Length: 417
Image (cartoon, rainbow, N blue to C red; front, side):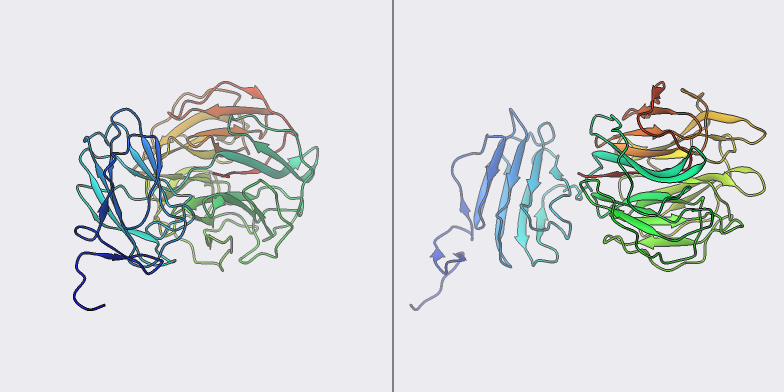
């Protein structure tokens, strides 16, 4: 064959398709709630009557091109969601949520490689960044009950219902820390068996707790942990016998790194949670020689900032969790002098700690919190055998008698998407 081929696409099969301007524009306007698209095509997406999920091809080659266009300028009302169908989108797995929500938008997608996957070459107006999936279920494990440490676990369903005890795996211990990692899994780390340990236990996306892995970092207990950067975790603060501000990052594969010299006031019995839309976190409250209300923000790269002056009632042994997709809440704790608290403090999507909110539920200490249902949370157990659900607006519900073994110093985290 001789001559010049212009504005055409070479398909996977090696067939050169005749197209105008390099794309075959599908003439039928898409009005369905789902559509599976093919490389080399442009699509008019009409969401006047319903949102639309667009499933990209299950396999792709570098340079594959797909264009989607808001036919009726209604994506702001009924969004378009991209399902990358096992391939990556802007370097994120297909578990991440990708939505386009602007009227009149058009998106020109190009496949790069297996590392970054589909990338918007052009996204007229604005394209939302991929949003990390949020935990649908929760888990509480380990703790101190009936004068002994335990490794029992309790799963929390997507409806916030706590399941019965499951015999534990791993070294029984108390005052552990737990956090989500890898977008759909969790990790428990450190704690005390009677002496400080640095053991960790990974939790898969079905809620199965794995056997002990010898820890990395200084053995300690009464520390806290939280997710940051959407798929990683950070452990920080705690007691080695005296208060510390050490931190250990945990990567998206659940590997805990060596100690990093801490920033912020050394203390034990704080807690931590995520906030914001891009993977920030916050550690707050705790104990030095007395209860404190200090907080420390964490960037989406795991950098812990210096102290922020205390807001709210100074206390330690608090619980914390994320809610509403971009906010957090700290609640309960111990004020000293035999005074438990049920006060709560909301964390805004900018990391600002609100003033005290009069508590709901039994005042108690040494509990923990976990996310569930995508945007809600639950505080569980502690010095009182109760649990309290938290709505997606941060409202703490009244007591529900906790299911399972009531215990102090358990860890809690969200898992599963």
